[in-house]
Amino acid sequence: MTAKINPWTKEELKIYILLLCANADSEKSEDEIQLIKSKTDSKTFEKIYNEFCDDNEDESFEKIDENVQLHDFSPLELNQLRKEMQEVFLTDKRFSMMEDNMNRILDNIIY
Image (cartoon, rainbow, N blue to C red; front, top):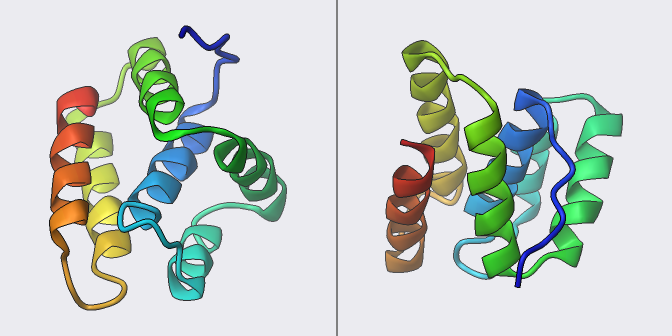
């Protein structure tokens, strides 16, 4: 299935990726959501959160892949994104096998 992709800004893409990280263990905690909200404005968060909630995991990966290809991320931007991803994964002070798997999948897509 090929989803029709509406291009996101880098900021929107980052928020979507962080939401996927928060949901890696199949539950988005309130702490994870608050952390992600703190990284953007409420309008951007709501737009991306609503879209994220309507997507399944395969659609999410496809959207991320297509949007990553639209932007030229600098090594510094990628490093910052990786730090923010790890921050979301470790919000609950543990790194589960599902989170590790999501981390590897996103690494393959982003790089």
